[in-house]
Length: 149
Image (cartoon, rainbow, N blue to C red; front, side, top):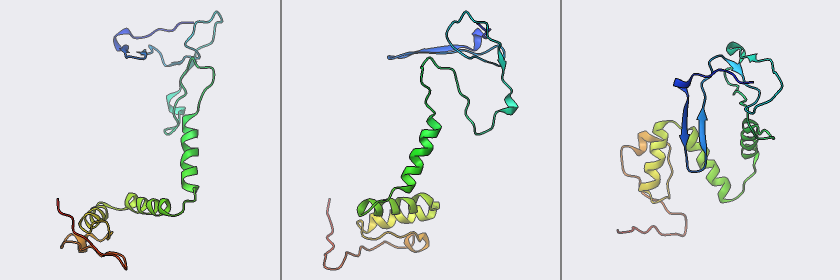
């Protein structure tokens, strides 16, 4: 079964690996397949108001197996959240989470303090860091060296 399209609103892109064709439907009907079939299928009208705002539509595909990428993305995010890290990886994740959840002033303070102290100080207090230069403080038993460019 073939349905009507609006040729003026259709477009195509010729890429190096594929040809993309975008067809604009004349009527909001759900196409069950992109391949020709001798069977006469009853067109299903799409009710726009019944589609949830955060639910993505499922489009017809020529692939036999469908992949739910939203489900895979949610699973990967859950695994990343539940992952138990140790050593440097745990420390890096801790600082990344602090930076990601911080406001703009805290991020600015973290960047300035880390750069000015040659990686020995990390502060989130912009009122303190923004006023003066941050001096480095090496760990016990170590010496801070100034590098000249």
